[in-house]
Amino acid sequence: SANALFDPTNVVVILTGNLLKRGSGMLDGWQERKFVLTRGREDNIARLSYYGSKGERKGSFVISQQVDVQWFEENDRNYAEGKHRFKILNSPSCPDRVYELEATSLEDMKNWVGKLREQAKEGEAARLAMEEATKSTKLDAEENKNDSGAAKPMAPLPKLDKLLVGNLLKRGQGRLDGWSERKFVLTRRRDDATSRLTYYTSNGQMKGSFIIDRATIETLIQDDRHYRAGRHRFQILHSPSDPDRVYVLEAATAADLKRWVSKLKEQAKGGEKARAAAMETEAKEEGGGGDDPEKTSPWSKFLIQNGLAKEEIVFSGLIEKGSFSGFGFGGKKRRLLLLTSFPRLIYADPQEKKFKGEIPWSEDIVAQKKDNKNFLIKSAGKTYLMTALTHEAEEWVSAINKTKAGYKNADARLRAHNSRQAVL
Image 1 (cartoon, rainbow, N blue to C red):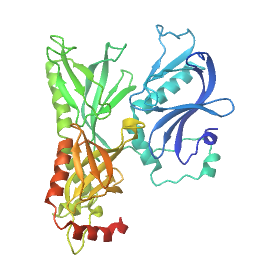
Image 2 (image 1 turned 30 degrees about the vertical axis):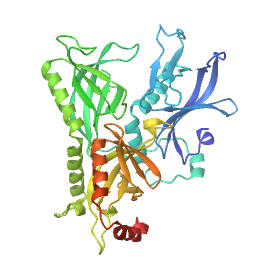
Image 3 (image 1 turned 180 degrees about the horizontal axis):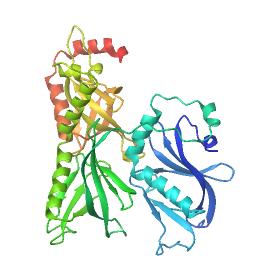
Image 4 (image 1 turned 90 degrees about the vertical axis):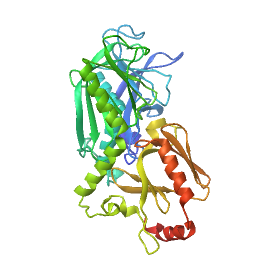
């Protein structure tokens, strides 16, 4: 069973079943394997693992936003009429490998392809749903062993505002470089003001989704490769979801082009204003009030208030904290980073509003810009890699280094902080 293969306290099993898998190299025959699609409760990473007839694990790879799941077509080398075959490409675990699989029926293939695409393309939505569904829940392993397998109801996803909806032509990638009409929906989350562009087929199947915050939106000009006179084309680059991908889109009219480009640029460049407004609205809805912004802020509980001084938020914004090694962007954690007047660098979960940790402030702390989005914080012998989502990296570097340069009486305030540390 799935529970025998995985510890249910660490992962949620999404789908299990037997598939034929084509070997690689000299072992290029088709062998039956048991496949298990899971999502980690802590790291929120989806993985597809497969096992031999005796239950021994044969392999495992990550299913993330860059993964492509395709049905076999007639021009594919291993296409066979009447066989229900599909393939998985571009896994971060093994980017150059193509996994070729075969289901027992068309319905089974549709189920697998649908679930895999859901985890690959709806990674962010699936992650949020998983957080909500598993929040404040500690599963009992024995209870799960006897579970009937019925799906537990998921808690509702964060509320979204629809900003713009319409049809655009989208240029495919690689061999699929033709133009396909897709329905696009631009949304913004109310809790952290993250904007996202999602696109669907004519029958409502979601094909992809990516973050707009801090992305670059450009109208195509004559020198651009895909420019065509009389065509209303634009492109989206540097999305935090997939920094290396370029989305090339075409609107039906010049007015439609202007409307899309304007709204997308507004969300990409105005992310910080929208975030601040969303946080202010949320604080009011939670019952906050008064003229003191620190008291109305949902983050005020992390600040130190004592006889020595009143700690205030100097600079804040959404970041992704972590390392580019391992699973790349999929392994990074989205956090709200707070720079305070003491000074301190606190990071918190922006959805649950929980304290997650603190970057130690030392005399030798320094912030360094890597590029427009990424920056380093070096302190106490450690280096932290950050990706700015609601600011430019340069703004963070400037704020941290200015706070360091202008800070006085550090020892006294740090002693005050240490006396409070146990409370956090």
